[in-house]
Image 1 (cartoon, rainbow, N blue to C red):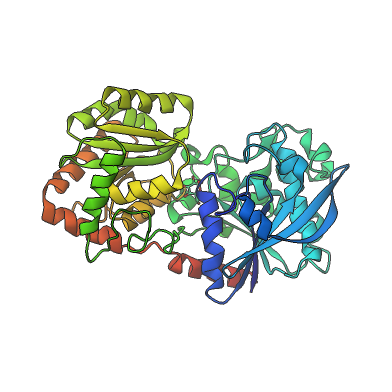
Image 2 (tube, helix red, strand yellow):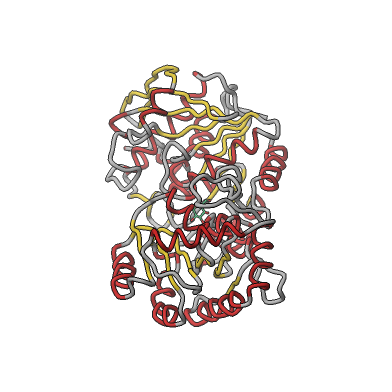
Length: 470
Ligand code: GLC
């Protein structure tokens, strides 16, 4: 089978979150199982210059964006078994960041048209186009309105994967004709609540919808999680499935990771102590036996930072140290900045997106706190477990599907259910009690490190789905 993945970001080319990790690793995992995978993403000007120089130019074409005629360059780069195609247009993609511009709607409408237009010009005929998140949501829409009936498209099936239903691509009604080039009589496909909603359009038209964990697939039928789209999701429940993400086991491997002060494995975790010492020293924190909790996250509302803020002092008073890495909404940055100013030898904060530092933190910390209000999948808790760092999570989405509470000494972390700071604190206290008994703790580390969150199982589940559709 031939599968074309399409998304707005992919490691190592461009990344702002977990989506990029998935697009950088799932296609490789599927292609290792005998299927041909290609990926198409925008050619952002921020892509590493060295990688850029290794790309080959395929062709330039003109793409219609409603009444506009836009240049579209097609480039290619091969990584492992996967060909990555790039859509070039400097007017749209030569910017300081990936998103957050006044014309994001037009930028990704262009991209979506370009992906379909490109198919005639590349040496790859997909059976499935697998689209991810709102930026690619118009591909199933255009496919169903304009392409499906043409011979070169008729056997292609589309899948739309939701990585986070909060970001839907919602715009004023005027974009329908002027930007999207969609005739008025198709308005029902995209209109919702008085807006043009790109994700809604994909829900209506994709052959199948998936989410990045089984729990999130049923959660989004509930108004508490759905950001308004539960009715639409419920209408497609027969074509909805949740498949848990995996992580890249080659990249995240404490046995071989050359950034670590000392490598370690499930069979021999002694190196983890050295990583902890090094981390404390590098972060300017005092060295003693107290537990270190890591927080690595985007500082946005759904990550549960409110809960952390409510009981932060109590946790520091319990003797816990914190190593925090992330960036996002300013009020949250300020909360953590203030904490590290007040407890300079117990709390360290680094603001920014720093994948290499993140790996040192995953390796050196004892626990990983992730109390998300909602979490479609979450990769950080899996990476933490891979590095023997015990997750403390709220039971939601992929956190619920990957972390089992250790109440009966057979789990791989600590969990709590209600979105409530005291319940979170209780889980933290249980983790600290367990930490104080070295034998119990090292057994728990062993169980966490042996939990399998590689892509192996999930890649099979995607392949089963592709087979059902084709
Ligand atoms: C989004 C979700 C996150 C998920 C990631 C990759 O960032 O918020 O939970 O792990 O996508 O699917």
